[in-house]
Structure formats: C-alpha cells, structure tokens
Image (cartoon, rainbow, N blue to C red; front, top):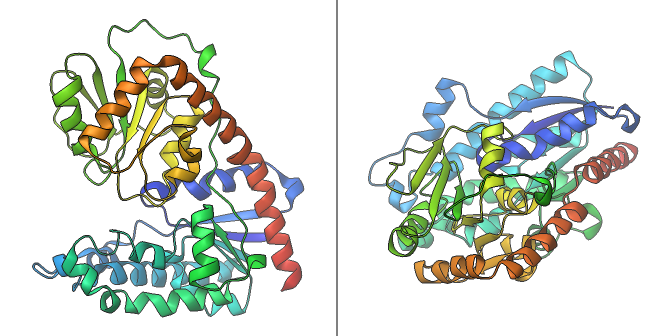
Length: 376
C-alpha cells in the first residue's frame, strides 16, 4: 500500500512521524510503502503571508495569526498532496497534525485520511496557546472561528484519529463526540539508548542540571535560569541545549544547535543529573520521553500530557504551580535523595519501554492503515 505521510515538521512535531516512516521502510512485511511530505518550511512567499504580524493587533489576536498560519500551511499541503497523487497512486494519507490537514477534507472523501494530533483546537483554546492574555481570551471565539468548523469537518471525514495522549483522546470523545471506535492511541516513539548503569562517565564535581528546548523563552528557560542564579549557582552547573541566543555565564553552559541523536546531544543526557522542563505551554512534551529513556530524573510543569507521561509523579516530579520556589524544592529533592531519584527513573524507563516502543507503534499504525483501506 502506497501511503503519503505528511509531517508538520515544526517544534516537537518534527520528530513524531519520521521514526515511524523510517521504521516502515525497513519492515516490508507490514505492506506499507511510505512517501514523506514535509508541510513546513513553507515557500518564501507563503511564509511571509503566514507569519507577518500587524503591530498592535497581535496582542489581541486580531491579526488572526493562529488561523492564518494553519490555513496557509493546509493549502500548501493540499497542493503537495495533489502533486504527489499526479505521479503516484496514493492509497491512504497519514497526517500530523490537524493544523496542517485542514485542506484535506475533500480528499478524505476519496481515500482514507488518518489524522495524528497532540491536542484538539478545543484543548488549545482552553490553554495559553491560542490566547496568552486576557484580551485575546475574550476575543478567542472570533479569532479562531475560521478554524473550528474546518477542524470538525476534517474529524468527521477522517477514517481514523490517532491522538498522542489519553488527554487528547478524551477531548475527541467529549468535545467532538467522536466514536471510540474511530480513535486509536498512538503516542510518540523514542529510540531506547543503553541503560544508564552501563554508561561509564567521568567523575563530576558539581551536579549538572539540563534544559533542552529549541525556544528557550517559550519552554520556560527564564524561570529555570532565575532559580539557578538564586539557589544553585554555587553548587551545580546548568547546561542549556537550545536554538535560541542565550548568553553563557559562570556555571551556565549553552549548547546551541546540537542535532538530535548526535553524539554531543547524547553526551548531555548521559552527563545530566536532573532534567528540567518548566514550560507551561506544552501539549505533550516528547523531550520528557527522551529524559525517561536516558534515565535522567525529570522535573516538569504539570501541563499538557506531563501528568500522564510521568505517571502522576511516579516517574518524576510535577510542578503545580510552576514557580521558582517549587522548582527549587524539586531540584533539592532530586539531589539530596538519590535513592528516590533512582526509583523514579527506573519506573520511567520501564514506562517508555512498555508504552512508547517504536516497534509496537509501527505495527499498530500499519494495522490502522490496512483496516482503513478495507473499509474504503
């Protein structure tokens, strides 16, 4: 079966479909021949239209950036799909996420379309994603109106919906009245590194706190930096892996542009004593899975799917609310109680092995595609 895979390819979404596509390419017995389309980056002309901001209106959401970006990318995706279909007989489409799939509703009447998603627009509307301040929240029904009807039409016509988390699945069931039979949980997959006990690392004089996030500010980096300066500058070092411009300072080491899965990237995980994700704008948090896989103690804001991933705190520490003081207490707990930290990381590693296993996810996706094809 020839299948088009459409990847949103922005922020954490970039690493969702690619492992599945690569694994399908090495497992011909599953009967799926993937064709990958990256929804982004957009061509320059479309980028300018999708990303420009009208000064003064952005704060209110009245430049319609949320809707404009998604509708522009979706039109681009539809054109790319049609171009591919003119060359290849595509039998199904898998797309991550609905944000880039809004232009596929008519195609979903012709061939099966499966939509992966980390969050519904209803969920995002209840968070700070679509409305970061009080004025934009008040105007939200107006500013995301162009998206809501299109999303519901897409969900109605999609053959199957593949939510990343139970939280997203519940939104589909209750906010959209989608039948349970049309939803299949398909969380992100991670490659499992060697067990931490088998890694031989150099002795360290100071515990290492690790932050990994392309957008330093949006991922809560400033809060972690404030906490470090106030409470841990004399006892720990802070390593920041980011794409943003962050100035190094005594005890703070900035690693800009590290490629995921590179040796330098792996070294940061292997050397880390605690990983901190103080982001309050997360829908899932794939980086949490990476931390659990590397058996690094995890501290994360209790937003999005963090409670689900960290098993309510059995696999890490949840910050609620996410404040400097709460973060300080959590970091102290990790450093001062290595036995507890080890128990949590071992629980987390087992959870990743059982619930976020690439091999089982690939087989589950292939099964969904064959079922969708048989119903077509």
